[in-house]
Image (cartoon, rainbow, N blue to C red; front, side, top):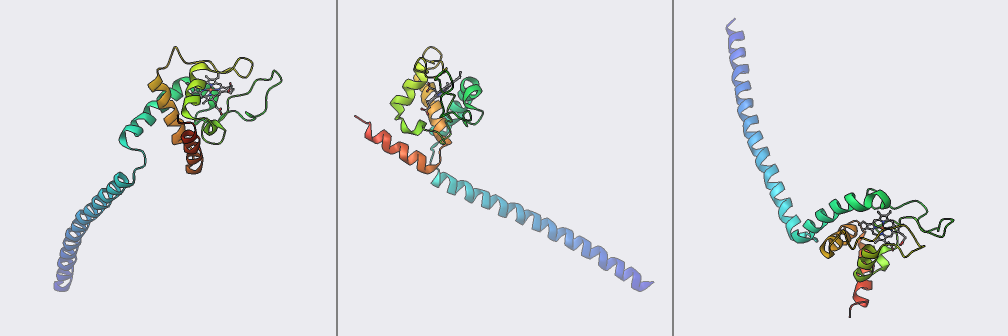
Length: 166
Ligand code: HEC
């Protein structure tokens, strides 16, 4: 009888002790997680290649892209299959803009022209956006598109861009 009571008391205090411990553990855990997250965001901030202004451009470009361009170039800029083979009428289908096509061969001046003017007649059905989009809209679209490009493609484009600078 006595033994059982002592046993129960011991279990009770052990449970209490464990609760306290797990409470401490929880607090410690939260602290550690918070500290890690803090660390992460610090490193992210330090290593962040796209600065805040550019991230805002990407967000703006993504919205414009979804609204105006995705129906032809695909939800993620993947383009149409066989975009590089002209159709029977000699026109091309929408190419990928995600770095798997050849948009990176064009410096930003040419990319802007393509987007403002649309397809050269007979070459494709892309409409021009001169009346609908501003220069800053078009630049945001280009920044968004480039945010999808793998680093080697982006670097190749940077060389093209450098070469065409006046
Ligand atoms: C009606 C379909 C259609 C829409 C909408 C459209 N495009 Fe296109 N786009 C095309 C086609 C087709 C081509 C390829 C033929 C050509 O270059 O004329 C093309 C080509 C391009 C190219 C050149 C890519 C390269 O590899 O040289 C870019 C850049 C581009 N589009 C961006 C855009 C952006 C940005 C938008 C939205 C503002 C847009 N397009 C909307 C059909 C479209």
